[in-house]
Image 1 (cartoon, rainbow, N blue to C red):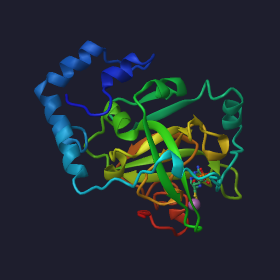
Image 2 (image 1 turned 45 degrees about the vertical axis):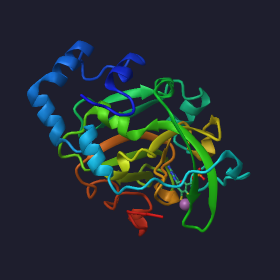
Image 3 (image 1 turned 180 degrees about the vertical axis):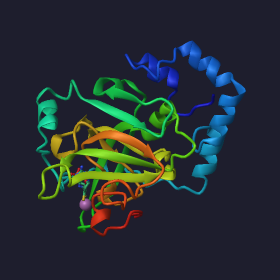
Length: 259
Ligand SMILES: Nc1nc2c(c(=O)[nH]1)N[C@H]1C(S)=C(S)[C@@H](COP(=O)(O)O)O[C@H]1N2
Ligand SMILES: [Mo]
C-alpha cells in the first residue's frame, strides 16, 4: 500500500512493536489482498489518494525562522500533573512510559518514547495563540499523527481522534476533571499535526507537556493537548468527558478553535 511519511514496515522494525500479531510478511500479503485494498480505499485518510482529497484546500499554518523564536514561551494551564503514575514516570525520564494508540483501529499498539523518537520526525516553528490573549513562537519536533494512524489502520467508522492526558485541571483531582482534546480527520492527517517530544531543540519540559504533546497548528492554544498518554480513534464525542470534545469545550469553548 502507498504511504506518505513513514510506513508500517518502519514502525515494525523500529522496535519491539507488535501490530496485532501480524508478521511483516503477513502484512505484505494482506496489503495485496483485494479485499484489504478495498478496505483501505473505503477507510478515510488511509491512502495517498484519499489523503490528497482530504487535504485539498487545507492550508498550512505559517512557519517561522529560528530568529523568530520567542525568548520566553509561557507555560500555561497544567504545569506539573499530580497523577502519581505520571510523577513516577517523570522521575525515571519516562523510560517506562508508553503511548497507547487504540480505539477504532485494526491494529492497536503502544510505543515507548525511544520508539517514537526513532520514527521519522517533523520539525516546525509556529506561533501558539492562547485565548487568554498571548502568543509565542516555538519550535516543535515530533511524529506526524497521520503516520501513527495509518500504522494502526483506522476503521471506516472512525471520525475523530481523542487525546487523553495525564493531568487533572479542575478541583476534583479524581480523574473527573482529566484534560482531553479531540480533532477530526482533516486535522489528524494534516502534515503539521504532530505529537511533539522536543521544543526549541530540547526534550519537552514537564511544564510544556512532557513527554509528548499535540501540535495542531491551525487551532488555538487549548487544542494543543499536553501530557498525551493515549490516542483513541472514535466515532463520536458525546460519550467522552462532558461530551463536547475537550476539557475547555466542556466548559463552553468552541470545539473548532481555528485561528
Ligand atoms: N493536558 C493539558 N494540555 C493543555 C493545557 C492543560 O492545562 N493541560 N492547557 C492548554 C492551554 S490553554 C494552552 S495555551 C497550552 C499551553 O501550552 P504551554 O504550557 O506549552 O505554553 O496548552 C494547552 N494544553
Ligand atoms: Mo490557552
